[in-house]
Length: 147
Image 1 (tube, one colour):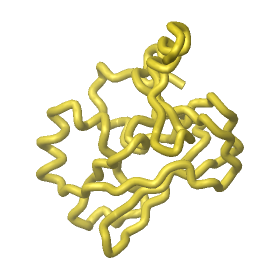
Image 2 (cartoon, helix red, strand yellow):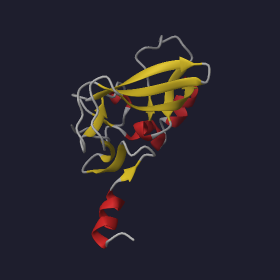
Image 3 (cartoon, helix red, strand yellow):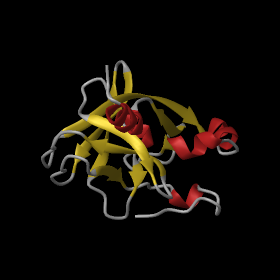
Image 4 (tube, helix red, strand yellow):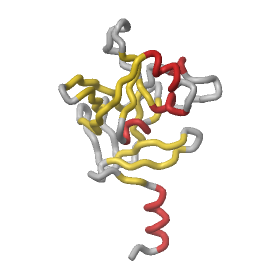
């Protein structure tokens, strides 16, 4: 059985299945994803399936809290029907930074579109994993971004 102090510290961190990542609350940001192991530049930190949707669905989702959890791609042609992607997995909780330590790499497979989070630089244990949001201007003015 856990000691009281151990149980309290475990409640602050929610780990993924591999124990490589954990989620905890970040002041002024909400939930964030942190490294529980070291990652080297170029390492794949996480890989997740996605659900793509078109402009009409985006207009509906933008009126909900889902806006803060879907992503757009820079590598897609603007005339293509898919506008955004809901990402399943912990990477959907990664916070924005203007100086990120990771990036999203998209891959279209027969099984659907997948996104990998790849380290842009070495990431230490307990360091928050961040990436650059490319749709910051789509967020309502009430949402503030902190580095």
